[in-house]
Length: 486
Image 1 (cartoon, rainbow, N blue to C red):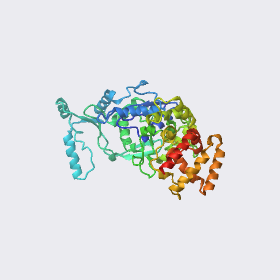
Image 2 (cartoon, one colour):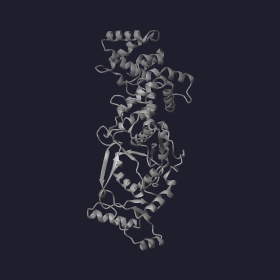
Image 3 (cartoon, one colour):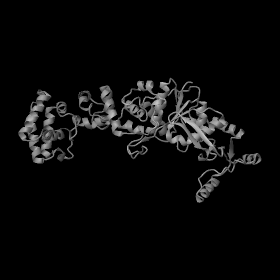
Image 4 (tube, rainbow, N blue to C red):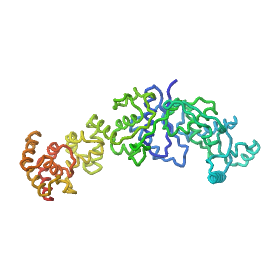
């Protein structure tokens, strides 16, 4: 049996990290098994559909390098792959179940349903349809149809028993039929299917073999099993993925930090780092290895390595991952990613001059080891291209020193800076150490005010490399400017 999996998002919101993990598992499982990865757009909820969400879906897939074999733009013989273009299918199969006595038309009005809800609320009953139309006579049903009364199609749920299914990750699962909402709607009065009908019909017609989704979908699976049995179809294999949690043990949400793929893209995370890290949320090859290329994942990914336990999303760990990938990447590629950011912030000319581009190239060694995300680069390099603004001169004052002591230190630096470019870094460091000893301060107390003079901040790239790139003259000029402000 050839593996066929699908990612079937509803374009009603941005791509969440949990959704990204789902389509990565779909994709790499299909590739590892030599199967097909399908993209299907589940747009039956027209009231919540929006074009921005659909575009975000394509942007996210393309950014992460995930190519689908079949989809809206790639017909593999199972299309259309957009559910709003498949309404005839859903109507046909809903009618089939009605003919076989496994479903029925329900003519209850919204007003009656609201009244029923209020009555159940007052009597403290579980809310659910009371099956009012399940036992309508054929004559009464026909009369309502002849009158043009709107209706929905409901699936007949058994009164008792249990539903069992095997999950490829969690094992055997059983649920009591009484826990399933009685006779749920499958086809709405506007001709659009509910998620459950569309999902089951499309997965069958598209010959989907494995369904990957989060464990929060487990309560829906018994209903889907009942629907498969009603149609007489073999269900796909279900793979319910572990939840993604924050470090506080609660389901990942905005309170933990960014949760949408687009936010990470805009912050300057590399796609390969995101793919590697997210795949490791609930999957591991062994207990030691953490780094995998795209090609390695297509070869090594397997169901057996997926964990049952929740995965913890660690933002700091992702930053570290991203930094590792930046350091392994081609320098020109990384520079090409942050040059537009520096242009947008007005740090570089538009377009950048040859001199600016050469300085970007020469300064890469300053930032390569310090970048956590691409967006860090403008802040780290700004001092090389623009005059520094000293928003808070007191940050130049080291601990256990005052402004006068800091001024003394900076004046002592001016002597050492003379002839700086003609000496090695080792020679310059030794001279700064000697000056610190002469001033009876620590080396760090000398370098802190010098660092602030150069960059306007206490955190900056390596000092001596920065001085060489900025030039001795500009360095001396900035030291004198800070001295004047102190």
